[in-house]
Length: 168
Image (cartoon, rainbow, N blue to C red):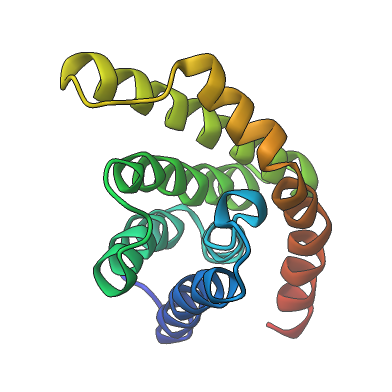
């Protein structure tokens, strides 16, 4: 697959934001699980660049964050890797390929990413006997605890995508 230079540069900038934003949030003493700072650039990358680059940014973001800062810790890294990869892939697929409207594509991606994360918790917990939170507590955490981050994503991402599309 061939990518345009502009799209690769945009992906690199979003990847950098996906590293810097969580660092700023964590340095501020804010819980990343509440505001989900790594999710925003991954969802934006899928929506503006498509599923391939969205998937790549979704995979690389948590790996680089873990390598550079130790966050997210293992096994959360593996859960986030799957979740963010699904965000990037599905948001790009629904919005760019299927031409679904922006907000439904965003929300569908967020739901499917969380389902993928919950399934990853099940697989890691049962297949590899890793200590995982009970599934109901995990699901509560990725919905209720993350509600401020979810609201921020729904309010912030559509205007970012629309501004990018206007200026492209």
